[in-house]
Length: 332
Image (cartoon, rainbow, N blue to C red; front, side):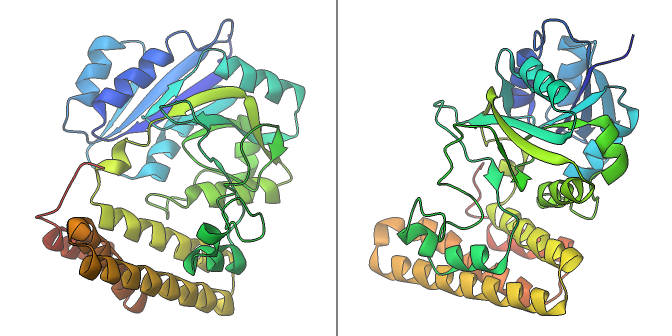
């Protein structure tokens, strides 16, 4: 009998969240056949051993190194057998009825290639998971603070769409990659995740290719899941994470825009970092109670500025960051 849904979770040193995620999947559907595939990126916290002991029916792929989000998910997709492929972050708790609701809606709307549920914070408030495709305007607005000044504005709001409260079904340019359900037939057409994105940015790229191939990307609030935002990436050095976000955006623009567009987005990013660095400097001088946090913000924005002006190897950048922040690391 054919598998209906293949759930793929890439995990890296996130045992507690992964255990909760798998527990929430124990009875995630009433009548569909589900397979669960864990791709472990060389965790050292006992995650793979926990999966083998507590969830023996889960298929476990153990990598010998951290291959990143895109490559890890692609390994899972390649061995999956489901009609639908569900990519989950390890820090997701799937609420009752979520999988059935998504699959039902996909069954009823065969033109949908990617769908995502309403994402909730731990306190059950709405978490923004829809994005506009990045353009110069929606990057410029947050760079100079317009999206903060005019909160809730569609025109000045930036690409994050904070004005949208997740109350109705809608087509979305981009669904954040913490929880996707994809139609296997569609993935065969628009392809696997781009492994050039180590972490972040692959969601924009995958959704863009889905739309380009003639499939819809849909936000569906009739299904819900909790996203703790405290998983694997939160354990990274915050400056390194910010560098990966920046590099992912630059890679996206390099892939889809010409040299003029690349120059323009780099200029906006430089402006963004200068504004943030200046703000952190003022806080550092004027508010002694916040100097520890402002020092990290100064380091973060200065390192990102350096990276915008110099084509540095990511591992070299990480080494620089680790050396600078060895005294101020924190988990997430």
